[in-house]
Image (cartoon, rainbow, N blue to C red; front, side):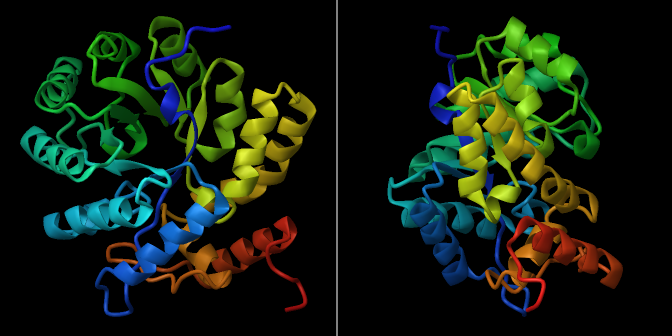
Length: 302
């Protein structure tokens, strides 16, 4: 059997959780609790609140902390919580991560510093400072399309030797880079793109931090379970079934606009976003509803 990776307990499905808002724009903590309860009932193993999908850039520091605390308290150990506590200011990332650690989160999701575009040396210094200051397991999050900087495999390899760093959410979209990470580190590698989960699993990835899991976590878990059981035909069929919906959820508008719209269509939220995010235009909304119909989530005649 393969040697377990450092973060194997965070393998499988992690849902990148949306943050619900009232029509006034305030965080709807009651709706957030309901979302957590729904995921508990669905068997979702891990939730990642306050990441990109949770609209973290528009939350105040107090809201950021309260969302994490609400998810941890509501989960009450029934599922794991991988709290988004990254920042482009190292001191702020440390403060948020210490908060998540103190209130009982199971792990911290650490996005690469955005906008200030540090060098590879700066990236290493940033993540190593967090690892030195905190004891909670850290999951690196590489998404160069949003941050403007890739965490190169050389840097990830160096970081992998730090005990708190156990996994990486890899969203660079490169199968070659993912292969290098798996070859050169003992980190648990998680897909950061729903549509690439099976390709990443094929080279040694161990799961996904999923947007579509906000809607159909059971189907994503079925795909992962099929692959783990070496039922490649079933895994491929799940991938192909999920592919169109996953693509629309990530291409029609910036995340989380499409997934919040889909949840609204399905009666699981009001779809409210915070500026500068705006609702889908009518053409994109029609396309998304059609995708939900084709998947079987919406009755074409309703």
